Length: 279
Image 1 (tube, helix red, strand yellow):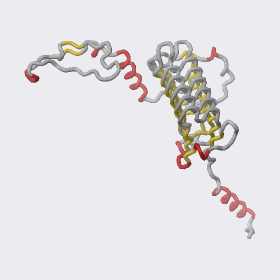
Image 2 (cartoon, rainbow, N blue to C red):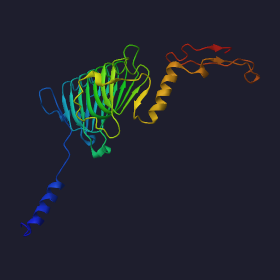
Image 3 (tube, one colour):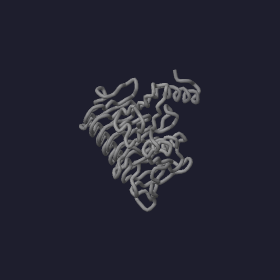
Image 4 (cartoon, rainbow, N blue to C red):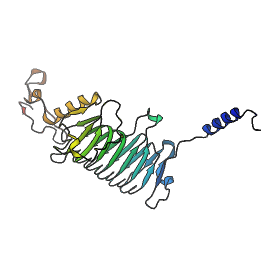
């Protein structure tokens, strides 16, 4: 029966409709626009699983908490929209020319999703917008990428093939590790405080309004723990004064007058080391 009080009826109507509001489902559409979510979506985690070479190439993926793109061209040219937690791209060209648009959600404390670009040219020429932290790890991992993110870490490249090479960044923080940022072709606009990375920028296409990234340093408002990571990275690459003298063994009665034994295990473990008077 309809309540006699019109105001009470309106309140009941609003209450009823609110109870039936549900979050949009994680969906995956193939190159022909067919919904193939049943083959790719782990429903309980709202996760799109695109592991394997070419698995989600040219697909459209929307409303997922996580998207996993592991393998050669796993998500090349895919359109990934309204993702809330993580997009993980691992492998050469795993997210080549991929478009990622994050969605702020209460599920992750109103923070946009993080993006991992791990591997050679993993996010080459990608567009990453409204995302949180982006990690570019590998030579040219984010080459020619266009990124609007809370913080961007560039590291693990090679000489002449930096992780963030020929890029334009809108961010609150950029971390340039060893071979992380290209010389004179890593361009950044640093945002301050509560500035929105997605705010309209009428000068976005004008390269003269950007500044060059500082090599092997951090710019902007970066996570505090990143400073120690950068120092460690440079120490591993270049060594420190304390290590330049190498290892000098000592004969001792404790080991029957036999000098110290040194083990060098792993690729280039004792590269350019000085080992003297050892057993």
